[in-house]
Image 1 (cartoon, rainbow, N blue to C red):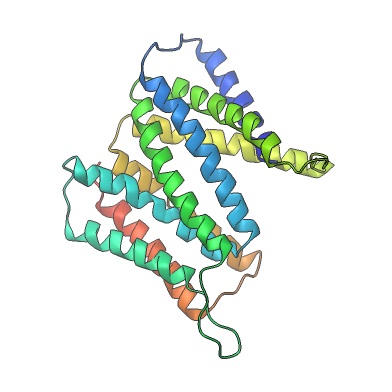
Image 2: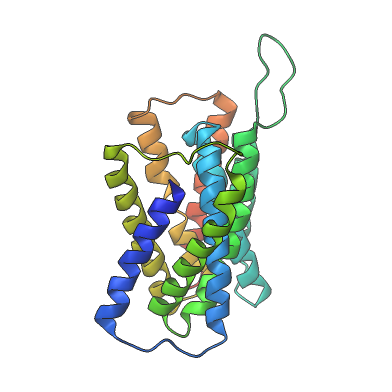
Length: 255
């Protein structure tokens, strides 16, 4: 299913590139775009697996903590480190850890984080790498950066998917209505990537990445209202702290 959405996204950005009709820049940064494609499909695969193994209410804020990586990279390059930035990083990380806390059952001691939460932490790391690489590639041409990125992600999937399929097991094919949903997901995904690339080519990666990581606010609201998900009180506090940390970083990050 990830392959369908990635191909739909590739088709969408190809249409944009044809309309623009600009030659691909012969720039080494396009290699960074290819790396961003591998990071992109890695974080999406991990994120989907995490959501399949844990409540979205927890998975989304934990994955959003990946914004800490580009913020830290910005600080290393000389971005101002105000008190709100430090507080935002602390809240995002501690909140993610709080959301990952697994309560014990029937008086038992709290257990280790679930596989879904561990996958979400791995997705967060991949998201941070993706932001950094696509930001660097977008300095040359954001649209071609997204095109190369999406081509790279599809190529990576073409290599990985046959290896993950069990021997003798047929490929899982989406149902009729799922095809349309997957195509919409792919087009929305590439539209978001293009918007991020265009924005990050003009602003600081720290601020743009954090703003792009505000999506869990909507995801958490939908998980509560539509899916009716419920989690332990400490986990809910962690979710709130993680979201608060990302918002503080968005407010304080340089433009």
